[in-house]
Length: 373
Length: 84
Image (cartoon, rainbow over all chains, first blue to last red; front, side, top):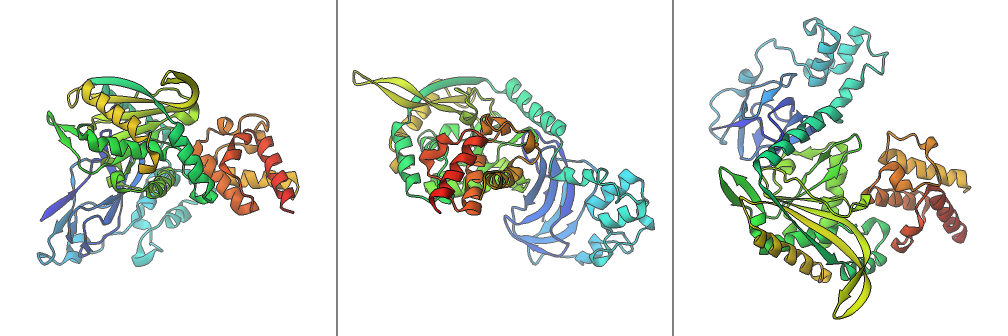
């Protein structure tokens, strides 16, 4: 038997709201299945279970209370071990079923839920039931709070980022390395590829550096992992946290998972999917926690070099600037080349400058053979 | 299709990408991506949408011609004329 607990969806999370269950007591679940929706300062996320079994009991109902990370939310038992009748355990007789949105709205409007009859399936009280009673439905402005789950408040997002970055700056002894990389071959390869492709299949320039990070990490795996309890825990799979800015302010760094196994086309498809879902507020919990390194690309905004702050407990962050045409000397001759400024911010507890230098060297070399990426 | 209709198609795409922006107040001669704060992913999404709605092919080598709203409208109008 195991408890399914309030997960930590990042270094900045101490508690979360249980917004909804996607399972009921008695349901079979399997590894990777989404079983709950959790709201944090950074938005609403789908959370998976990481074992096979049966939901014996849901311990906590969706609601308004902030639940600390680590609090048991449900009991999961191995299939065949179910000892109690699940329905009786989960739903006491006569208990009202209320959707989380309706419960929140009722609290805002001061509506007494016990006086309501639900119109939803199984008599669940829904948002419309609450608003009908309160006569609030005529005010669209007042209905706005229901959108909060999808668009987290800019203030909450800011505080969450501030907490994680303060922790990073106080705990992690950062060191920084920078290099300039000739992108002639990479850009030529990309131009040739995109010329043959329909607009929907075109590659964004950032996919080549992302794949090159995965190649370089396989040569210098010490930069791929977590620093926990005074030790580096290296990762085998390359999961790259990719910084995605959000229009309402703030950012998320969901992970592209298993980049070392992906072709360039698979990586582009994964990137499209990830950016789209990040901006639509449809990320899974594991995507927020599985990255072993982060890539921040700010070249689109004309930034030359990025000096990153590592996202704990990770041990490195790669910063990509704008590709600019520069005078480049090679073999005694001068020519104009597109040049990328790449930086590494790394944790001195987990690696030294020599390893960081090896990483940047491997990264730059990988970009000289784009057809092999 | 006249230029107003082309502009409307562009706006239809931009509403999805930058829903909070007052598109009518956009300076048509400024750098569109900077004005709207859109990155290369959003820009590609906009072009994919225009490709679907107008049937215009936009090769990557032409991206640099598409700086402002005025540029984009003129480019699409010329392409639509060509295909007529």
